[in-house]
Image (tube, rainbow, N blue to C red; front, top):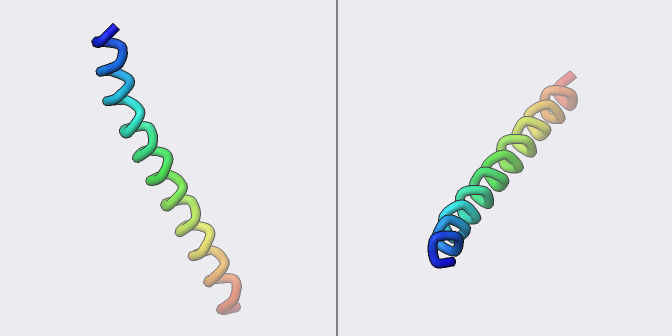
Length: 40
């Protein structure tokens, strides 16, 4: 039981960080695309 809790405590923050990083990358990519469209 402690092993499962330990792996969950390790994996959850990693998944949260990966999700946050993906969202940050995705939004920044969208912002750059919008900025390039505004320049035209």
